[in-house]
Length: 383
Image (cartoon, one colour):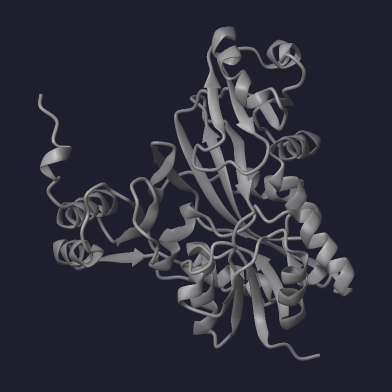
């Protein structure tokens, strides 16, 4: 059976964009589905505009693509399952599998999978009724999380005492939230994991362990951690029945022990450095795994990534791009083609070689300084 496209991608953001570009370098054709339309993925390849819940649209994508993967984990597993059943396509053409997707989508089910597998992770329970059982089990301080859809700090609150817990009742009272143990950690780590069955054999491998620094609940910097979290990262992916490419976020505690925070069944912000580290990128590996091709050997050099976040009062991003490049000919700027707005992830800078963190930060500041415009007089506040 022949197909019009080699790979379908559910999602139209920057992760889809960079996955499509990786596939195109291999001569492959991709089709993305983007509910919003006109997103970063649609700028580099054919795209459909439809809701993730549109079963007919999913069926069309599944009928014209040899295999399908995800750009994000917010595509409802129930809609995907219905489309597959109506079309009669085998579930193995989808990566990750539906059961894995359903587990990862629900943060409570994700935690429960770790518990069953003995993977260290924060204790978590559903918030039900008046929340008393959750308080008795977790105690304070606790983290409140939406079970579905949260990312970059969205859908997350911290309650330090009973009054703060009660203050958040308007968001958790209708259900769909969990209470989670608050973890004191000294730093955050991340590992990109590859796991795929080829015949009777499992291939499991990891990109280097990276340290991630957050700012305003968003990933700000990523650089080599000089640590090895591969064992626990692999166990976390195995715990959810994962197959494909996964980003695993971890906490390192003061005593050096590791606990799994969350995983994402797709390329991940913490793996963007691989676009310039000299070896295969996470996006190439994502495409290879989705198409049941063997991944490329992992080999690269230390690289630091600095995210580019939308700022107020900005001009043409090209002025920032030029400034960053001329500040350091060894850095690379990646722009996602998104509409700029304050706080939005719009691109990133990679620095390779020596002093990678300082150089990435300096190049980013050069970008921001050239990109920002002087505020309008009405925006100035008297001291």
